[in-house]
Amino acid sequence: MLKSLLFRPPEKEPHSLNSPEIYAAISKEGISEMRRPTSSLFWSALAAGILVSFSLICKAALFAEFDGLHWQHALASTGYTIGFIMVMYAKLQLFTENTISPVLPTILKPTPAHLLSTLRIWCISLSANFLGTALMALCLIKTPMFSSDTVSAALHLSREVQALGFGETLAKGVPAGLLIASLVWSRATLKGADFPLIFLVTYLIGLGGFTHVVVGSTELFALVWNGEAAFGQVFLGNVLPALLGNVIGGTGLFALIAWAQIKEEMPDRKNGDTKAADRSSAKRQDD
Image 1 (cartoon, rainbow, N blue to C red):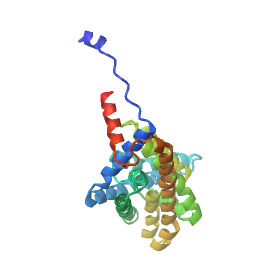
Image 2 (tube, rainbow, N blue to C red; image 1 turned 60 degrees about the horizontal axis):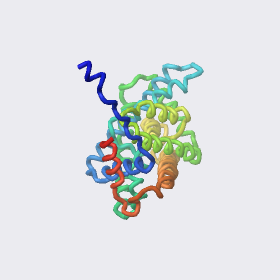
Image 3 (cartoon, rainbow, N blue to C red; image 1 turned 90 degrees about the horizontal axis):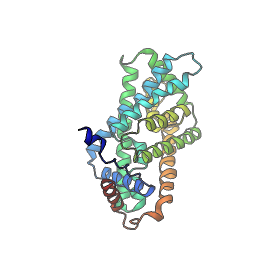
Image 4 (tube, rainbow, N blue to C red; image 1 turned 180 degrees about the vertical axis):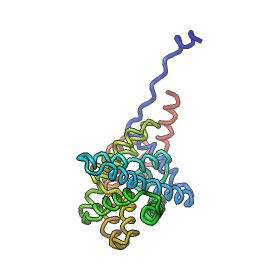
């Protein structure tokens, strides 16, 4: 046994994906999502809305715990990462991840079928995410599930989000969408070793006060359930601009830039298929 350990041939280093291979791999994943049944997408997105709400709840709990400290915001923002970590490791349908995954194959092959499939995923994931966040906000405000300190802190944080104007909410939504899209892109190369990246990127969103449409909806629904705001008011004034900002950042900036940097290197760009992804997968297995 000792001889086998000493003279075992060295393991080959894993193949590092280049940009076209990353694009092809994410495109293949996006096509797979397009083919999922509506019920599967809905329940996955509902669960994502419920779990990502813990980003607000954990941040509020830490905000209350560190009340009065100079580093209160920085420390509490670590709690903002929790919901994203759970959603991404569970591979649930979060709308802001879908601003890139189904978009890349659609850019590669902009057929009516791909466009409709992308819109289908967007509508299902966003509406089910909102249903999940609305349910969690209801539990937060109307049940004794969480401590009064946590509820008070959550309402305080929610009022800060509501106080942002349309333009400011939209502007702060752009970097949030860009960061989530870059996270999806980067995770394609990490293969399970992505916890630090998820933590750092989502921590930056919380620390920077950038507006994420799904987590933000939990905050705004909390105000609605608490009788401090009307649904139409928060939707038009806060949810809509955050949605636009996330789409601009994720699809309008990152996805299009990702396409621009690799379009001349994609041998199958005219066919719009996933052969490049299959070849890269076979190459990694050979390595």
